[in-house]
Amino acid sequence: MSMAYFGAGVLAALVVVSPAMADPLHPFVGTWGGTGRVVVDDGKSEQIKCNGYYRPTEGQKGLGVAIRCASASYSIQLRSALTINGSQISGSWEERTFNVQGQLSGRVDGGRMVLNVDGGGLKAAMTIAVSGSSQSVVLTTQGSGLKEVRMALARAQ
Image 1 (cartoon, one colour):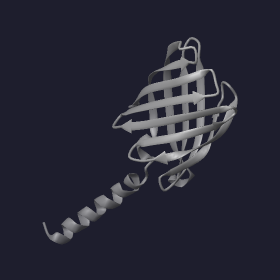
Image 2 (cartoon, rainbow, N blue to C red; image 1 turned 60 degrees about the vertical axis):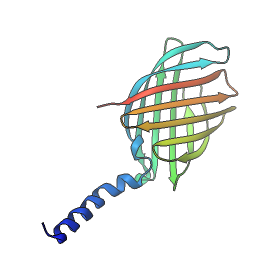
Image 3 (cartoon, rainbow, N blue to C red; image 1 turned 135 degrees about the vertical axis):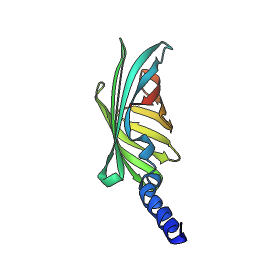
Image 4 (cartoon, rainbow, N blue to C red; image 1 turned 90 degrees about the vertical axis):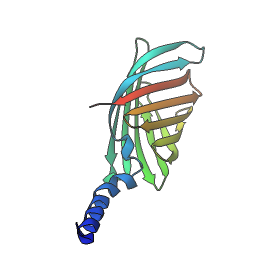
C-alpha cells in the first residue's frame, strides 16, 4: 500500500469521525430507559421508571431533552432546550406535571453535563453522565417538596 493511499484513508476516517467527536453533546443523543428513585423532603422515597429522549437541534448546536418518570405516586415530565457554545450550555426547561419553567446553565465535558436549574421557585442542580451505553441522571432541588431524583438509564437498542 502506498503512502498516498494510506494518507487518503486516514484523512477520510478523520472526516467521517470528526463531526461526532467535535460535538460534546453527541454521546447523549438517543433514546434511554431505566429505573430510578425519587426522594421527598420528609425522607420517603419511591422507585420510578424513566425514559429519556435526546435529539440534536439547531443544526447540531443544541439538544432537545425530554425525560419522563412515573411511579404509583409521582410523575415527572421534564423538557429542556439546550444550546451549546464551546463547553458552555444555556437553555430553558419546563416540568409539565407541576407546570413550572425557567432557565438553565452549565457546562459539558467528556460525556458529562453539569447544569444549574432556576425558575418557578425551584433551584436545582442536575448532572447527566454518559459512559458507553449507560447514563446516570441526578437532580437535587431546593425550594420544593422534592429533594432528589436519581436515574440509571441504558441506551435503547
